[in-house]
Amino acid sequence: MIDPKLSLAISVQSNKGVYALLLGSGVSRSAQIPTGREIIWDLIGKLAKLEGGDCEPDRAAWYKDKYEEYPDYSKLLSQVVYSASERRELLRPYFEPTEEEQEEGLKLSTEAHQAIANLVESGYIRVIITTNFDRLLENALGNKGRAPIVINTEEIAKSALPLITHPTGCIIVKVNGDYLDPQTKNTADELKKYPEPIERLLDRIFDEFGLIVCGWSGDSDIALRAALKRCSNHRYTTYWTDIREPKGEAGNLISLRQGKFIHIKNADRFFGELADNVFALEEYSKPHPLDSPVLAYRVKKYLRDDRCDIRLHDLMHQEVEELYAELSDEEKFPVCGISNNGHKDEFRRHVKHYEYITKPVLAMMITGCRWGKKLHEDHWIHCLERIANPSGKRNGIPVSTNLRLYPALLLLYGGGIISIATENYELFSALLNKPKVRSVHGEDVPLVKSLYTESVIEKESTQKWLPGMEHERKPVFSNYLYKILREPLKDFLPQDTRYQKCFDRFEYLFALVNTSLEDDAYGPIGCFAFRHKNEHREVSIMQEIGDEASVLGDNWPLLKAGLFKGDVKEFNSAKQKFDKHINDFIRRGGNF
Image (cartoon, rainbow, N blue to C red; front, top):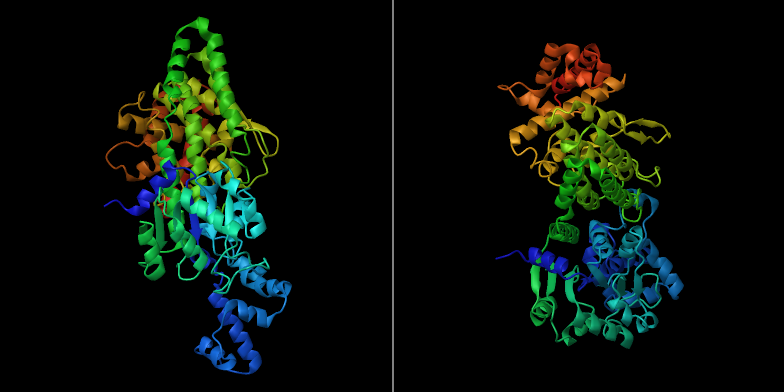
């Protein structure tokens, strides 16, 4: 039987905007927001302290014995403080974090709230019903730049009905009010019936939307139960999630609505997995950029005919500028959108989207570097230089700012690997040294000094956020690039062993050139180092390249192309320095 979690993800992804959420206190549990019952027990403890009594171990029994009635949330509040303003101030500490709680991550938006915000941002969820008083969901949406319409009073509900059909809006219906709202509903009597505008709004939502229930027991909130029971139309499925099999009222509602039960460990895990699955399906469902092979064909055609130089220029210019414009769009790729302590799903979405929009230009770059001549070199150099210098602010959070260079890194690897495969070392040298990148200090520096794996994603812990790399050993990003570039280079390098050799040769030479340009730095360690350590039968790329230089000396094609200042001594110095760096790393127990 198919896991209902997977069915839910498929339904949400394929029916964008037709599922509403019904959330209870369980969604805010990991933030340590207290439930109404827990607030009652705390207030009873304070009363007992003032009365000089001992309310343990049964606070409800102590209260009943003392005041001759069972403790009721609203009645207890009304007897402790007399005005709505006093009640708000009394409740505020239960819902808003102190500085110490903020440092500990308490009473802040949880993984569940953030995952829901991601689904809202992408248009998958537009309507949320909640019994919670807290504002964690509103805060999570606010961090995404999404200001929801919050309906927590009869007056707001009167004008809210058209909002639920709005294609981009999001509404949150707080059926019991907000902790700062003087009309908050708490008692059984208050929860028996909602104002007419709220009732009509709920009727329409339950009639027109599918439903995902999480963190709500169904035991209290009598009017909410009644609204669910009134709805006889079940055009979309109801998915009811809980940590245990629902019984009582919840079980009855699932049966009545012909719903599906999903067993979950907690709300954070459930919504995190739901968002991951939905976005994975979104990526899978995206059409392959069909223009990539067409563009590659046109590049190849124009390269064959010298009369098509202008057409080739115009084609490259058009596609490169379209990619540049998208990369420079700070609404799509905000430079402060991801932090070093940010969220893996958002990081992955950025990475996959970068890969998707870069595919057409990458196909053109690989084709051009394979079949082009010296006179076409400027096209590929301009392409790299343009994409490696996206416009916009440069003072964002490092992960977000540097990740914008990922498309340029893909283009450099694609063009560099194919130039290595064809032994076109003049082009290889040109790709590394001729494009200039504007540094944060406003200086123009060679591409090779500014564009490499660690300059795009610095931390290994962040590199492990890359899809499928969670348990990857070093070098994480290099291994990821090796997998990602296999497909676009397959037509040119169909044999896996040949592809591996060209990939490793590119990365090792790239690292040596980088090392030769810096007195106190080393080039990036790539897959070649892992294979150097573990290959016992075959000659590694590191040894193979060293042997070539020894045999050919200054006549080695790489030196004649201008790399290492054309001097074999310069090459040997860089190689000795970098190889020692790798071997020292391995001896120190480097994680390969």
